[in-house]
Length: 474
Image 1 (cartoon, rainbow, N blue to C red):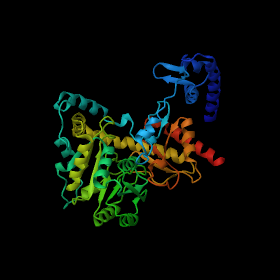
Image 2 (spheres, rainbow, N blue to C red):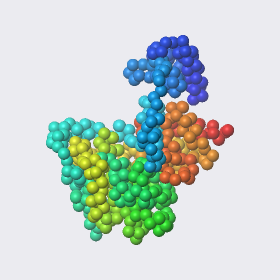
Image 3 (tube, rainbow, N blue to C red):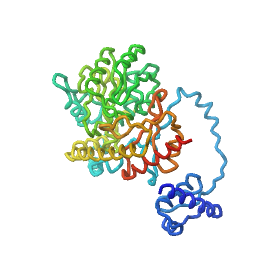
Image 4 (cartoon, rainbow, N blue to C red):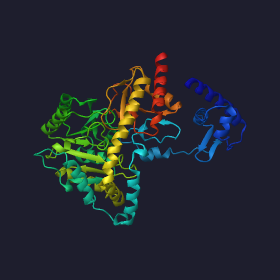
């Protein structure tokens, strides 16, 4: 059936190509309904044909208006060569922006993103919070440098709930509000590590941490990490050999692997960090995305200032509310605050008020309980589709939380070609190379099960499997 659809869409695209060649630039193509009637094809087949023509640069779509013959624009090329001399050599080559940040057209199957779909967000709470914040002082006032005291208290109370007996919970003043976790990573690397000095990173790890390390000029030292977390012996060896004083990690539902450290491993890592007089920069990005288990931050087990805890609300509340909190103690906290002030002076009081309003509502907890069930259903649907339709790929484990599946592909896979072939057929996937701070250990894909249109997950997995099989048959 799929081959018939592809053949039909190819014939329609070829016929329309001849029509476009004779049409004037800017001419409007017949609407989809008319093309369906003309060719006796389904809307899906017609849309595939139009996507093919758009990919070739022959037509352009204007949402809500129609599809038009693309005008050929001839213009004098701009010469920016003078900037090369003016800017000089870059201090370092920054990683390219991740595939996960690409905005996807509505007609593709989007498995690439790092963000949850809009229907998984507490939209009603967010809209109401913005309305209330606009009427309050936050709309016209400058907040304290470290953040709104009520929001500081919320972050520390959340962490303190997990503190075991005998461990002092953090005080509200230990928290600093940041404009998103990406800003927090850069601040932590500058304040705790410093340019030219080593920082240990799990490999693979969050691509944003790799980017932050490049931007701040710290020297990355990869520590191998798998579905169960890092090898504590390798971590100890890396500290010993490099003299590093910081280790960035995601103990709960790591991006991209989904790893959740067992309590014993967490204890070993914490002991290793303490023994070397170092910091653990704990990225608790998925705190609100537990499915089969809840995250237990390592920072809750440490009152000696070794763990710097970073938690963001951007993914769970709204991408429009870029708010995160970092909890640190002692001089480390003062250095982080000083760096934050130098970078941004303060975080929008309006956004802080919105974030606080949302998480303080009783409906926030209700939303999180419903989110857990929605994520579980989406995860299981995509995992099952991958196992059925992508033979030869290995899903080491179904994550107990987070937003992603981490798929190991056969060693002979041409990953770049696979990603292109999938995109040509309307499926966006994220190549795993972007999550390795050094050479990848093999070809991987990261697939997001919290994206839009979960009903299309089986079709997306089928297309990935077909593209992979074509490579294996060559």
